[in-house]
Image (tube, rainbow, N blue to C red; front, side, top):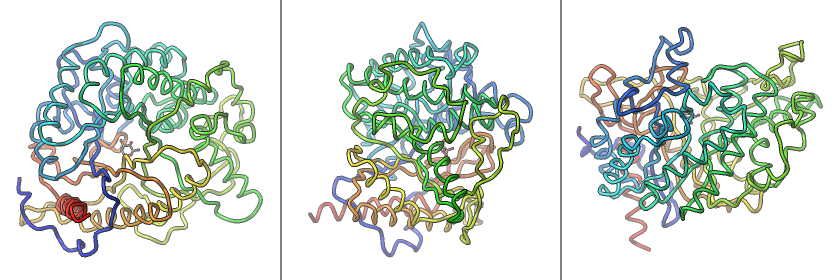
Amino acid sequence: MSTTSPAPSASAAFPVFPPGFTFGTATASYQIEGAHDEDGRGPSIWDTFSHTPGRTLGGATGDVACDHYHRYPEDVELLRRLGVDSYRFSVAWPRIQPQGTGPVNEKGLDFYDRLTDSLLAAGVSPAVTLYHWDLPQALEDRGGWRVRETAEHFAEYTRAVVARLGDRVGRWITLNEPFCTAFVGYAEGRHAPGAREGTPALAAAHHLLLGHGYAVRALREAGAREIGITLNLDRIEAAGSAPADLAALRRAETLHNEVWTEPLFAGRYPVAEAETWGALADGSYRRDGDLDVIGAPLDFVGLNFYRPLTVADAPHAEADPGLRTATDIGVVETDPYGTRHTTMGWPVVPESFTDLLVALHERYPGLPPIHITENGSAEADTLSADGAVHDADRVSYLRDHLRALSAAIDAGVDVRGYYVWSLLDNFEWARGYDQRFGIVRVDYDTLERTPKDSYLWFRDLIAAHRAQEQEH
Ligand code: FCB
C-alpha cells in the first residue's frame, strides 16, 4: 500500500473551500462488509434479492464484498493516510436486530463500536447512516416499508444504535436516498425487494419519511448532536418547451424531489401529486400529525449527486391503471448531453451540480446547512504495469464537481462538507462488481487494496485546504 507518491497532474488548481469545511469518504454496509452470516447477523432484503437468480449482474452478492468486516483496520489506515476529517459508513440493521425488532445482538453492535474507536484513534470522525437499504428480511416478510409498523421498528433500532455509539458519533444520517428504497425497490423493482407496485410504493415513501421523523426524535432524546437525512435530489430539465414536456417536468419534480422536500422542509405534501399519480396517491397511508413528525428540525441535509436528468412527455407504459407502478408517471428520460458518460452511462455535467444547489437554496430559504454525502464516478479502471491505477477520468470528475460545489458556495449556498463515493470499489447493487466507484481499488480475488491516483489527488487537495486554513 503505497500512499507516499506525489499525486498526478490535475492538481494545479485545487478548488478553494471555507475554513472548517469537512472532507470525507462514504461507504455502505451491504456494499463492503461481507461476513453476511457472522456473529448473529440476520438476512436482509439484499441477501434475498442478490441470491435470487437474474436479479444482479452475474449473480453477484454481498456475501464477501470487500470483507471490510474483517479488514476494517486496513481501511481505517487508508482513511488516516488520506487525511479525511470524516468517514460516512452505514450500520446494518440485521446485525443489530437479526429479526428487525426485539432482542439486540450485542456482537453486531460490538463491530461498529470497534470501528468507531479505530476511526477516532486515526483522527477521523464517524458519520453514521442508520439505513442504507439493508432492511431485515423478517420485516419485509411483514410488509416492509409498505406498512407503518416498520417506521416504528426503525425508531426502536435507532435507539439501540445511539445508546451504544452516541457518546462518540457526532453526525447521524437517518436514511440514505429514500427515493431508491421506495421507488427503485417497490415500483421499478431493480433493487430489493424487487417489487413493481403503485399505491404501496407511495405508502413506502411516506413510511420512510415517518421512520425518519421517529428516528430524529429518538436521536434528539439520546442527546445526538448533528442529525440529518440524505436525499438524492435531482437537477431535472424538460427536453423541450412544449406544454406537455413542461407538465412532464412537473411530474418528474414531484416523483424525484418534492415527495421528500415538501414534507421535510415546507410542512406539506407535494402540490402536484394528484396530477402525477391520480388515484394511486389516495393518501390512505397518512394520518393526522404525520407531517409534524416528518418535519422535525434538522441540523443538516445530506445530498448525493452524480448526474442531471432531462425528461420528456411519454405515454404511460401500463394501460391498466390497476397495474400501474408509481414510477410510471408518463415521463421518459432523454439524453441530450453531448458530454462524456461514466461506465454507469451517466453524463458528466458538473454545472448541473451548481444549478441544483442554487435552485434548492432559493426554493427553501429555511433549508439547513448541506453536506454532500456522496459524489463520485464509476470508471473503467485498470491496474497498470507500474502497480498504480491511473484513473485520470475520475480525477477530472472529482475536480470539476468540487469546482462546481465551490461555485455554489460562492453563490451563497451553505455547504459544510463533501464525501467522495466511495472509499473502496464495492458491490454496486444490481450492477454487481463491474462498476468501480472507489478511490481505492479492490482486487476481488485477493481483496488487496490499491490506492488509485484519485486517492492521491484527494489527499493532496485536503492537505492544500489544511495549509490554507493555517494561513488564516
Ligand atoms: C447511490 C447509493 C450508493 C451508491 C451510489 C453509486 O445511489 O447511495 O450506495 O450505489 O449511488
